[in-house]
Image 1 (spheres, rainbow, N blue to C red):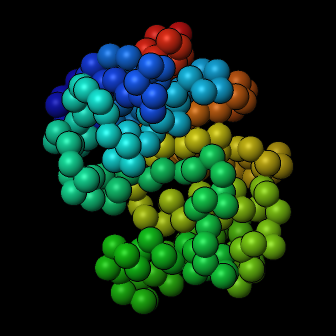
Image 2 (image 1 turned 45 degrees about the vertical axis):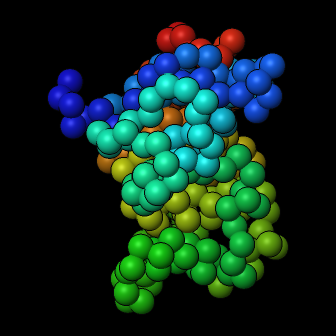
Length: 220
């Protein structure tokens, strides 16, 4: 596969919150353009930690991390990564902080320097994609858990990312919105890694499966 199709590469990456209990041990991982990859593992195995390393929210103790063809070491190296990679947190309340749904979805595009007219269009397109056309002025904190999940996804999609890192994305979604989410992943031109315990969902949207165990990844 061509080098420009290699989006994320972790080589011999190790990380520990406590030096006596390493979370990741000499881990290798690749994500190529157009791939949908599932990341499996027990609670506490390091799946979310791996996402946070890719986004520069944590720094590896050793090893090499390359994203979009460039090695990323310091905090400033990840500014470009955060514009091009969308991270959906496991807890939607960690992602939503504006008074209304429209303001939450608009926040990212405004930070990317989009004009007011462009942002308004992005908000409308994103809400329509998620089936939330009437939610523009809804108060975010009053939404149900499933509704918050969709709006959190909207804040990520509004950034027009090249890669998605999705941490338990379908928790709390009813069947209609779960199916809508599956269709988005299948139809949009996206590359993504998914953490989920929903095996049926993973079978629908991913073509590669990795198990994180003992700090390392094994293809299953």
